[in-house]
Amino acid sequence: MRMYTIAWGVLSNLVAAVVQAAPVCSTAELFAGNPSYEEPMDRASEGQGLLDNPPLAWRSLLFVGDKLVTHVGQEIWHTDLKATKPVIKRLAGRENRTGQTIKPGACQDARFANIAGVALKSDGSIVGADQTGNNIFLVKDPFGVNCTITFLAGSTKAIESVSPGSPPNVGDIDGPGASARFQLVNWPAVIDDNIYFIDEGSRKIKRIAPDAANTVKTIAKLPEGVYFAMIALNGKLYAVANNSVSEGFIIEIDPASGAIHEIIRGHPQAFGSSGSINISGLATDGKGLFTSHSGQLLYVTLDGKVQSIAGNGTYFEFRRPYEPTRPQKADSVQLVASRRVMTAGSNVFLAYRDYAVYYSAAATTSYIERINCK
Image 1 (cartoon, helix red, strand yellow):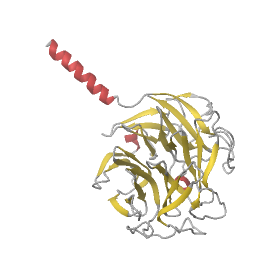
Image 2 (cartoon, one colour):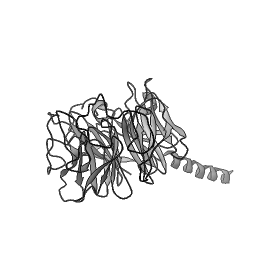
Image 3 (cartoon, rainbow, N blue to C red):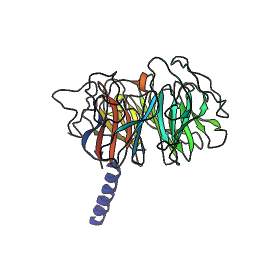
Image 4 (spheres, one colour):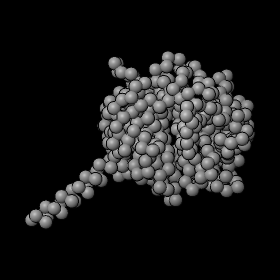
Protein backbone atom coordinates (compact mmCIF):
# COMPACT_ATOMS: atom_id res chain seq x y z
CA MET A 1 0.00 0.00 0.00
CA ARG A 2 2.84 2.36 0.77
CA MET A 3 4.43 1.75 -2.62
CA TYR A 4 1.09 2.57 -4.26
CA THR A 5 0.83 5.80 -2.25
CA ILE A 6 4.30 6.94 -3.29
CA ALA A 7 3.60 6.18 -6.93
CA TRP A 8 0.31 8.09 -6.75
CA GLY A 9 2.09 11.02 -5.14
CA VAL A 10 4.66 11.13 -7.92
CA LEU A 11 1.89 10.92 -10.53
CA SER A 12 -0.02 13.73 -8.81
CA ASN A 13 3.06 15.95 -8.88
CA LEU A 14 3.51 15.29 -12.59
CA VAL A 15 -0.13 16.13 -13.29
CA ALA A 16 0.18 19.30 -11.20
CA ALA A 17 3.27 20.29 -13.13
CA VAL A 18 1.31 20.03 -16.38
CA VAL A 19 -1.65 21.97 -14.98
CA GLN A 20 0.66 24.70 -13.62
CA ALA A 21 2.25 25.31 -17.04
CA ALA A 22 1.32 29.00 -17.08
CA PRO A 23 4.17 31.40 -16.29
CA VAL A 24 4.02 33.34 -13.03
CA CYS A 25 3.97 37.11 -13.46
CA SER A 26 5.44 39.28 -10.71
CA THR A 27 5.56 42.96 -11.62
CA ALA A 28 4.47 45.36 -14.34
CA GLU A 29 5.93 48.70 -15.41
CA LEU A 30 5.24 51.35 -18.00
CA PHE A 31 7.72 50.66 -20.81
CA ALA A 32 6.71 53.25 -23.40
CA GLY A 33 4.04 55.83 -24.15
CA ASN A 34 1.69 57.49 -21.71
CA PRO A 35 -1.89 56.24 -21.17
CA SER A 36 -2.92 59.53 -19.52
CA TYR A 37 -1.63 62.07 -22.06
CA GLU A 38 -4.66 64.21 -22.88
CA GLU A 39 -4.21 65.08 -26.56
CA PRO A 40 -4.60 61.97 -28.75
CA MET A 41 -4.12 63.98 -31.95
CA ASP A 42 -0.63 65.17 -30.97
CA ARG A 43 2.16 63.33 -32.78
CA ALA A 44 5.45 62.02 -31.44
CA SER A 45 8.71 63.32 -32.92
CA GLU A 46 11.74 61.39 -34.10
CA GLY A 47 14.50 61.29 -31.53
CA GLN A 48 12.33 61.48 -28.42
CA GLY A 49 12.57 58.92 -25.63
CA LEU A 50 10.18 56.01 -25.14
CA LEU A 51 8.37 57.76 -22.27
CA ASP A 52 8.44 61.30 -23.65
CA ASN A 53 5.29 63.20 -24.57
CA PRO A 54 3.42 63.18 -26.83
CA PRO A 55 3.52 59.39 -26.96
CA LEU A 56 3.92 57.36 -30.13
CA ALA A 57 0.67 55.62 -31.11
CA TRP A 58 2.14 52.13 -30.64
CA ARG A 59 0.29 49.22 -32.26
CA SER A 60 1.85 45.86 -33.23
CA LEU A 61 5.16 44.98 -31.55
CA LEU A 62 7.84 43.08 -33.45
CA PHE A 63 11.28 42.36 -31.98
CA VAL A 64 14.07 42.20 -34.55
CA GLY A 65 17.15 41.41 -32.51
CA ASP A 66 17.58 44.38 -30.17
CA LYS A 67 15.27 46.55 -32.24
CA LEU A 68 11.56 46.97 -31.53
CA VAL A 69 9.37 47.72 -34.55
CA THR A 70 5.80 49.02 -34.54
CA HIS A 71 3.37 50.51 -37.04
CA VAL A 72 1.32 53.65 -36.53
CA GLY A 73 -1.39 53.90 -39.16
CA GLN A 74 0.53 54.97 -42.26
CA GLU A 75 4.01 54.70 -40.75
CA ILE A 76 6.53 52.16 -39.43
CA TRP A 77 8.69 53.14 -36.46
CA HIS A 78 11.45 51.47 -34.48
CA THR A 79 13.74 51.88 -31.49
CA ASP A 80 17.10 50.34 -30.62
CA LEU A 81 16.75 48.85 -27.13
CA LYS A 82 20.48 48.28 -26.68
CA ALA A 83 21.08 52.04 -26.74
CA THR A 84 21.80 53.67 -23.40
CA LYS A 85 18.76 55.89 -23.88
CA PRO A 86 16.53 54.38 -26.59
CA VAL A 87 14.75 56.83 -28.86
CA ILE A 88 12.05 56.36 -31.50
CA LYS A 89 12.72 56.76 -35.22
CA ARG A 90 10.49 56.63 -38.27
CA LEU A 91 11.53 53.74 -40.49
CA ALA A 92 9.13 54.05 -43.42
CA GLY A 93 5.97 55.79 -44.56
CA ARG A 94 4.61 59.22 -43.73
CA GLU A 95 1.26 60.20 -42.26
CA ASN A 96 -1.02 62.17 -44.55
CA ARG A 97 -4.03 63.48 -42.64
CA THR A 98 -5.79 64.71 -45.78
CA GLY A 99 -5.58 61.50 -47.83
CA GLN A 100 -4.02 58.10 -48.28
CA THR A 101 -1.43 56.99 -50.82
CA ILE A 102 0.44 53.74 -51.39
CA LYS A 103 3.86 53.77 -53.01
CA PRO A 104 6.82 51.35 -52.99
CA GLY A 105 10.44 52.49 -53.08
CA ALA A 106 13.02 53.81 -50.64
CA CYS A 107 11.70 53.45 -47.09
CA GLN A 108 11.55 57.14 -46.22
CA ASP A 109 9.72 57.88 -49.49
CA ALA A 110 7.35 54.89 -49.42
CA ARG A 111 3.72 55.36 -48.47
CA PHE A 112 1.09 53.16 -46.82
CA ALA A 113 -2.64 53.61 -46.25
CA ASN A 114 -3.27 51.67 -43.01
CA ILE A 115 -0.90 48.97 -41.81
CA ALA A 116 -2.38 45.97 -39.99
CA GLY A 117 0.40 43.75 -38.73
CA VAL A 118 4.09 43.02 -39.30
CA ALA A 119 6.16 39.83 -39.17
CA LEU A 120 9.80 38.79 -39.58
CA LYS A 121 11.47 36.71 -42.30
CA SER A 122 14.60 34.64 -41.74
CA ASP A 123 16.86 37.15 -43.53
CA GLY A 124 15.79 39.98 -41.22
CA SER A 125 13.40 41.60 -43.68
CA ILE A 126 9.96 42.63 -42.43
CA VAL A 127 6.63 41.64 -43.93
CA GLY A 128 3.59 43.88 -43.51
CA ALA A 129 -0.08 43.99 -44.47
CA ASP A 130 -1.69 47.23 -45.65
CA GLN A 131 -5.40 46.57 -45.15
CA THR A 132 -6.61 49.76 -46.84
CA GLY A 133 -3.99 49.60 -49.60
CA ASN A 134 -5.01 45.93 -49.98
CA ASN A 135 -1.50 44.53 -50.36
CA ILE A 136 1.29 42.60 -48.67
CA PHE A 137 4.63 44.41 -48.65
CA LEU A 138 8.26 43.65 -47.80
CA VAL A 139 10.78 45.89 -46.03
CA LYS A 140 14.25 44.93 -47.22
CA ASP A 141 17.37 45.95 -45.23
CA PRO A 142 15.09 47.69 -42.70
CA PHE A 143 17.84 49.29 -40.61
CA GLY A 144 20.41 49.81 -43.34
CA VAL A 145 21.16 52.49 -45.91
CA ASN A 146 19.38 50.52 -48.64
CA CYS A 147 16.05 50.17 -46.83
CA THR A 148 13.45 49.53 -49.54
CA ILE A 149 9.72 48.76 -49.68
CA THR A 150 8.48 46.23 -52.25
CA PHE A 151 4.80 45.43 -52.79
CA LEU A 152 4.62 41.64 -53.08
CA ALA A 153 0.97 40.90 -53.79
CA GLY A 154 -2.34 42.67 -54.29
CA SER A 155 -1.97 46.32 -55.21
CA THR A 156 1.66 46.16 -56.36
CA LYS A 157 1.98 49.64 -57.90
CA ALA A 158 1.72 53.17 -56.53
CA ILE A 159 -1.79 54.60 -56.17
CA GLU A 160 -2.17 58.29 -55.40
CA SER A 161 -5.60 58.23 -53.80
CA VAL A 162 -6.81 55.33 -51.66
CA SER A 163 -10.20 55.38 -49.96
CA PRO A 164 -10.75 53.41 -46.72
CA GLY A 165 -14.26 52.55 -47.90
CA SER A 166 -13.09 51.49 -51.36
CA PRO A 167 -9.71 49.75 -51.24
CA PRO A 168 -8.02 49.27 -54.62
CA ASN A 169 -7.99 46.07 -56.69
CA VAL A 170 -10.63 44.29 -54.64
CA GLY A 171 -11.29 40.61 -55.28
CA ASP A 172 -10.61 37.04 -54.25
CA ILE A 173 -8.05 35.89 -56.79
CA ASP A 174 -5.04 33.65 -56.17
CA GLY A 175 -2.05 33.28 -58.49
CA PRO A 176 0.99 35.48 -59.19
CA GLY A 177 1.30 38.28 -56.65
CA ALA A 178 0.92 41.08 -59.21
CA SER A 179 -2.48 39.77 -60.32
CA ALA A 180 -3.71 38.45 -56.96
CA ARG A 181 -6.63 40.30 -55.40
CA PHE A 182 -7.78 40.58 -51.80
CA GLN A 183 -10.63 42.00 -49.74
CA LEU A 184 -9.00 43.36 -46.55
CA VAL A 185 -5.63 41.89 -45.64
CA ASN A 186 -4.15 41.75 -42.14
CA TRP A 187 -2.00 39.88 -39.61
CA PRO A 188 0.90 38.38 -41.59
CA ALA A 189 2.92 35.51 -40.12
CA VAL A 190 5.96 33.68 -41.52
CA ILE A 191 6.81 29.96 -41.54
CA ASP A 192 9.88 28.81 -43.51
CA ASP A 193 9.77 32.09 -45.44
CA ASN A 194 6.25 31.39 -46.64
CA ILE A 195 4.13 34.44 -45.82
CA TYR A 196 0.67 33.72 -44.42
CA PHE A 197 -2.01 36.33 -43.86
CA ILE A 198 -5.72 36.70 -43.28
CA ASP A 199 -7.88 37.99 -46.13
CA GLU A 200 -10.65 39.21 -43.86
CA GLY A 201 -13.16 40.04 -46.56
CA SER A 202 -12.82 36.60 -48.13
CA ARG A 203 -12.58 34.95 -44.70
CA LYS A 204 -9.56 32.96 -45.80
CA ILE A 205 -5.94 32.39 -44.88
CA LYS A 206 -3.67 32.79 -47.87
CA ARG A 207 0.00 32.08 -48.48
CA ILE A 208 2.63 33.85 -50.55
CA ALA A 209 5.25 31.34 -51.66
CA PRO A 210 8.93 32.36 -51.64
CA ASP A 211 9.18 32.12 -55.42
CA ALA A 212 9.94 34.68 -58.12
CA ALA A 213 6.25 35.32 -58.83
CA ASN A 214 5.21 35.66 -55.15
CA THR A 215 2.49 33.12 -55.90
CA VAL A 216 -0.62 33.42 -53.75
CA LYS A 217 -2.66 30.37 -52.71
CA THR A 218 -5.61 29.92 -50.36
CA ILE A 219 -4.84 27.36 -47.64
CA ALA A 220 -7.91 27.51 -45.39
CA LYS A 221 -11.42 28.89 -45.07
CA LEU A 222 -11.88 30.57 -41.69
CA PRO A 223 -14.81 30.31 -39.25
CA GLU A 224 -17.07 33.36 -39.09
CA GLY A 225 -15.58 36.10 -36.97
CA VAL A 226 -13.46 39.23 -36.78
CA TYR A 227 -9.78 38.39 -36.39
CA PHE A 228 -7.49 40.41 -34.13
CA ALA A 229 -4.13 38.65 -34.44
CA MET A 230 -2.34 35.70 -36.01
CA ILE A 231 1.06 34.25 -35.10
CA ALA A 232 3.22 31.24 -35.98
CA LEU A 233 4.38 28.61 -33.49
CA ASN A 234 6.13 25.30 -34.22
CA GLY A 235 5.03 25.20 -37.85
CA LYS A 236 1.39 25.99 -37.11
CA LEU A 237 -0.65 29.21 -37.25
CA TYR A 238 -2.77 30.51 -34.37
CA ALA A 239 -5.46 33.16 -34.70
CA VAL A 240 -7.71 34.93 -32.18
CA ALA A 241 -11.15 36.31 -33.00
CA ASN A 242 -14.69 36.91 -31.84
CA ASN A 243 -17.94 36.34 -33.69
CA SER A 244 -21.44 37.72 -34.07
CA VAL A 245 -22.87 35.68 -31.17
CA SER A 246 -20.43 37.17 -28.62
CA GLU A 247 -18.05 34.21 -28.57
CA GLY A 248 -14.30 34.57 -28.47
CA PHE A 249 -12.13 31.85 -29.90
CA ILE A 250 -8.58 30.80 -30.68
CA ILE A 251 -7.91 28.38 -33.51
CA GLU A 252 -4.90 26.43 -34.78
CA ILE A 253 -4.35 26.12 -38.53
CA ASP A 254 -2.10 23.52 -40.14
CA PRO A 255 -0.61 25.23 -43.23
CA ALA A 256 0.22 21.90 -44.85
CA SER A 257 -3.33 20.54 -44.86
CA GLY A 258 -5.50 23.56 -44.12
CA ALA A 259 -7.02 21.69 -41.19
CA ILE A 260 -8.40 23.91 -38.41
CA HIS A 261 -8.40 22.84 -34.77
CA GLU A 262 -10.28 24.83 -32.15
CA ILE A 263 -8.17 25.60 -29.06
CA ILE A 264 -10.95 27.34 -27.14
CA ARG A 265 -14.31 28.94 -27.88
CA GLY A 266 -16.79 30.53 -25.53
CA HIS A 267 -18.61 33.54 -24.12
CA PRO A 268 -16.80 35.97 -21.76
CA GLN A 269 -17.10 33.53 -18.83
CA ALA A 270 -14.78 31.11 -20.68
CA PHE A 271 -12.11 33.80 -20.45
CA GLY A 272 -12.71 34.62 -16.78
CA SER A 273 -14.96 37.62 -17.18
CA SER A 274 -18.52 38.79 -17.71
CA GLY A 275 -20.06 41.47 -19.90
CA SER A 276 -19.06 41.82 -23.55
CA ILE A 277 -16.43 39.78 -25.35
CA ASN A 278 -13.10 41.66 -25.51
CA ILE A 279 -10.55 39.03 -26.47
CA SER A 280 -7.63 40.59 -28.35
CA GLY A 281 -3.92 40.15 -29.01
CA LEU A 282 -1.75 37.06 -29.36
CA ALA A 283 1.85 36.17 -28.48
CA THR A 284 3.78 33.07 -27.45
CA ASP A 285 6.61 32.00 -25.16
CA GLY A 286 7.23 29.02 -27.44
CA LYS A 287 4.97 26.74 -25.40
CA GLY A 288 1.55 28.35 -24.96
CA LEU A 289 -0.32 31.48 -25.98
CA PHE A 290 -0.79 34.87 -24.39
CA THR A 291 -3.98 36.80 -25.09
CA SER A 292 -6.02 39.43 -23.28
CA HIS A 293 -9.62 39.88 -22.22
CA SER A 294 -11.31 42.70 -20.30
CA GLY A 295 -8.28 44.00 -18.41
CA GLN A 296 -6.59 40.64 -17.86
CA LEU A 297 -3.56 39.04 -19.45
CA LEU A 298 -4.37 35.39 -20.08
CA TYR A 299 -2.24 32.34 -20.73
CA VAL A 300 -3.86 29.67 -22.89
CA THR A 301 -2.30 26.21 -23.20
CA LEU A 302 -2.53 24.45 -26.53
CA ASP A 303 -5.11 22.07 -25.07
CA GLY A 304 -7.38 25.01 -24.22
CA LYS A 305 -6.78 25.67 -20.52
CA VAL A 306 -7.07 29.38 -19.64
CA GLN A 307 -5.44 31.12 -16.69
CA SER A 308 -5.36 34.81 -15.77
CA ILE A 309 -1.74 35.74 -15.05
CA ALA A 310 -1.88 39.55 -14.76
CA GLY A 311 -4.32 42.44 -14.53
CA ASN A 312 -7.12 43.10 -12.05
CA GLY A 313 -9.92 43.28 -14.63
CA THR A 314 -10.00 47.07 -14.98
CA TYR A 315 -10.23 47.88 -18.67
CA PHE A 316 -12.70 50.71 -19.35
CA GLU A 317 -10.84 53.50 -17.51
CA PHE A 318 -8.39 53.71 -14.61
CA ARG A 319 -9.87 53.36 -11.14
CA ARG A 320 -8.46 56.07 -8.91
CA PRO A 321 -6.39 56.33 -6.86
CA TYR A 322 -4.01 54.73 -9.33
CA GLU A 323 -0.84 56.00 -10.98
CA PRO A 324 -0.23 54.15 -14.27
CA THR A 325 3.33 55.48 -14.61
CA ARG A 326 4.47 53.68 -11.44
CA PRO A 327 5.49 50.00 -11.22
CA GLN A 328 2.71 47.69 -10.07
CA LYS A 329 2.27 44.14 -8.90
CA ALA A 330 1.16 41.98 -11.82
CA ASP A 331 -2.14 41.05 -10.21
CA SER A 332 -3.07 44.68 -9.51
CA VAL A 333 -1.95 46.39 -12.73
CA GLN A 334 -4.82 48.04 -14.58
CA LEU A 335 -4.71 47.06 -18.24
CA VAL A 336 -7.03 49.66 -19.74
CA ALA A 337 -7.65 49.21 -23.45
CA SER A 338 -10.00 51.48 -25.33
CA ARG A 339 -11.83 50.09 -28.33
CA ARG A 340 -9.92 51.04 -31.47
CA VAL A 341 -10.66 48.13 -33.78
CA MET A 342 -11.90 50.42 -36.55
CA THR A 343 -8.64 52.39 -36.66
CA ALA A 344 -6.00 49.94 -35.43
CA GLY A 345 -7.55 46.59 -36.31
CA SER A 346 -7.31 45.40 -32.71
CA ASN A 347 -7.64 46.75 -29.18
CA VAL A 348 -4.52 45.08 -27.78
CA PHE A 349 -1.23 43.96 -29.32
CA LEU A 350 1.09 41.55 -27.51
CA ALA A 351 4.70 40.46 -27.81
CA TYR A 352 6.97 38.25 -25.69
CA ARG A 353 10.71 38.55 -25.13
CA ASP A 354 13.13 37.50 -22.37
CA TYR A 355 10.52 36.49 -19.78
CA ALA A 356 8.37 39.57 -20.30
CA VAL A 357 5.05 40.18 -22.03
CA TYR A 358 4.71 43.55 -23.76
CA TYR A 359 1.11 44.79 -23.70
CA SER A 360 0.40 47.51 -26.28
CA ALA A 361 -2.93 49.32 -25.88
CA ALA A 362 -4.51 52.75 -25.60
CA ALA A 363 -6.30 54.49 -22.73
CA THR A 364 -6.51 58.22 -23.48
CA THR A 365 -3.41 57.66 -25.60
CA SER A 366 -1.17 54.69 -26.45
CA TYR A 367 1.19 52.93 -24.07
CA ILE A 368 3.14 49.70 -23.58
CA GLU A 369 3.12 47.87 -20.26
CA ARG A 370 5.98 45.40 -19.68
CA ILE A 371 4.81 42.51 -17.50
CA ASN A 372 7.56 40.34 -16.05
CA CYS A 373 6.65 36.64 -16.17
CA LYS A 374 8.69 33.48 -15.50
